[in-house]
Amino acid sequence: MFSFFFQKIVNNFQFKKNIKYYYILFSIFKLFIKEKIIISFKKYKFYTSPNKKDLSRWILKNLKQWDEKNIKIIIKFIKKYNASFIDCGCNFGAYSIPIAKKFKNKKIYAFDASEKAIKEIKKNIALNNIKNIQYFNFGIGQKNDKKVFNQNLEDFSNTGSYRFSNKKIGKKIDIFSLDYLLKKKIIKLNSTVILKIDIEGYDFLALQGMTKIIKNHNVIIFFELSKILIRNTKNFKIKFINFLKKQNLKFYDLNLKDRNIILELKKLENLKKNQETLGDFILSNINFK
Image (cartoon, rainbow, N blue to C red; front, top):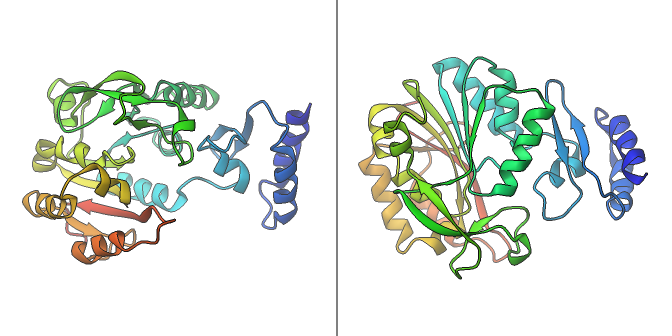
């Protein structure tokens, strides 16, 4: 009953500019809602949940598209370069769904190590009647391997992001490199490849597992600088800088302005204790000047 009425409230407020009263209603109804709530945008929609450990909660709370700026930039690049798109850490499909709806004749590759995340993206694929997303339930890394993965979100302080476990708590899952997947023709890529990588601190390993793709393709990689990268990789700063130089990858902000990677990493190290990320950046072997 509560979910039914709140769905009506969402439908009423979604396209209004002033939703301050909605926030009040959300703070009340979130305590009682048990079912998923559908958020409809112009050309696609999502199942969302008020659960504080569910990433889709942000959409339900704010009635806005997740990472809207990033998605618009990706769509622009796909149009300009006829690029392939790979979503590493797809979760419920915040990126893959709108991009697949925009480019119905283009194959979208979505990866997530979490069975729960794949179940969520499958529901959203069905909700939108999408045929061009190919999803995979395994991890992306530097090399083919097996690693323990923890899907119990209560073990983490962050919101809605599953992680590999250093405490051997969880289930062993397969990990493959993107280079291997391309070699085995599991994925097929155009000359320009766009990647969104968000795999909770193992993003650098994914980069190291795609050196052949970087060498043989134009790449545009959306990459988040976070403290967990530093925690997960010994001497991360030196290794990351050397990797970018060796692979001839330039470092841009989302406005395609050159950024000094040394200065940005210093900013990352000096973030306040309650701040985990510096933000999203673009790594590319394309000169955007």
